[in-house]
Length: 194
Image 1 (cartoon, helix red, strand yellow):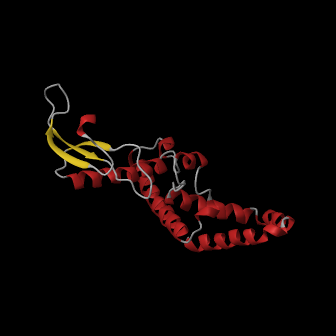
Image 2 (tube, rainbow, N blue to C red):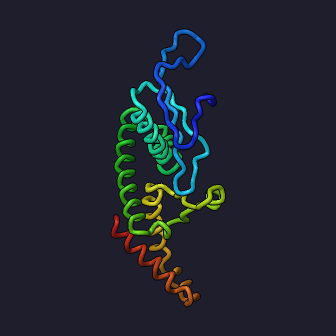
Image 3 (cartoon, rainbow, N blue to C red):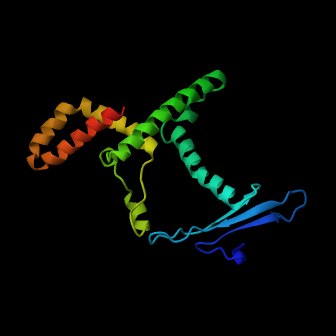
């Protein structure tokens, strides 16, 4: 496959490729796609995809959707709702998945609204240091819209619970009062997003 010349900005679609040496397997279509350099950033490698789809455009579109689906699976499993640890089956599993779907949708919507209002920086760090160091420019988002929505609720709840203590700390640092007020304003905006 290296001889096919997959370089930045190149894509191709080859039909009827025999993938294995063994008999009994159908032929596939092979897609090669390497995103062009954009805003000074270049992906480390291109994609080779085996597909039964009939066009380059469709194969790339479907494969790009995969990353969003994988993020959703992570959010429903270890990244938020811990679905696997419930050991539910049958009707209980169906009911639980329905509740998770409703909660997931609400968290996504709150997270998107919070991000659009510029409140994400108050909920968590925008970027991970290790990820920033690997890239030329630190543009990698650290948290998904789900995470921002879910933990934004927790952040507001914790702040309400510890409000008296927080106000005492604010009085200790009068020079930082403007920053504290920005955070309090962000909390009220996140509450309005709910």
